[in-house]
Amino acid sequence: MPRGKTFTCEKLRGLALSLDLPGVTEAVSWGQPCLKAHGKLWFFWSPSEHAPVFKVPFEERELLVASDPDTFFFTDHYRRHELVLVRPERLDPERARANLLRVWRKQAPKRLLEAFDEAAPAPPPKRSRAR
Image (cartoon, rainbow, N blue to C red):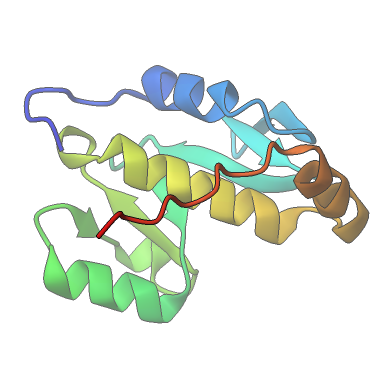
């Protein structure tokens, strides 16, 4: 991750919206602005921790916190939820983008996901190396 680039709520919200995914709406949760995907909380920022909150399975959260506690953490408030907080100054935008897309896909209705996948351009064919 490039050092010196600290993410703010607005910068990360912009990254999330730049994915231009269907079913994403702006909302308010617990008095805070957030984004919902398909009616479910998708992107939000912890005002008390001044950090973005990402949805991850418990097992992944434990791995992230154990392997990089300078970046990933959670508080007692989040202990019982499949969520992890990320220190904004250590946030990797590619990891954030991948998480947002993964959570969006998990929350998407099956028909919407099928239509989205059908409309997506096919990846370029892999080139075989000449010997």
